[in-house]
Length: 87
Image (cartoon, rainbow, N blue to C red; front, top):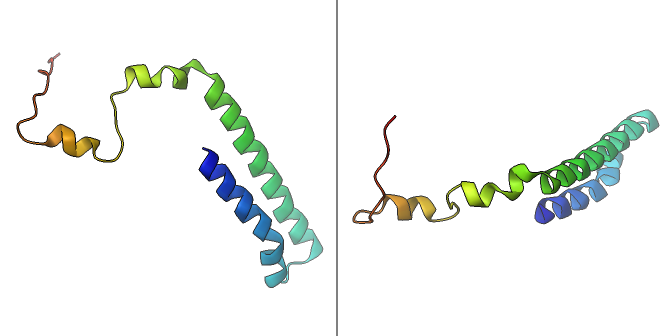
């Protein structure tokens, strides 16, 4: 999340220059600035919810490992896999 938030801040900082390049009027610039503020608040609220809820705190205990290379390890021939239970 931190990487994405930093990228958002970087891009948000470029918005005034883009507005100038597009020759937006004052009202349009205000609308764009309001949108950036709303997105900032949304990201902040989502992050607070995501880190505060049990739903995501317990996920590493429930969800199997994943990430780069995981699927290749799972599908590699000769790797022992536990039997699947059929319902």
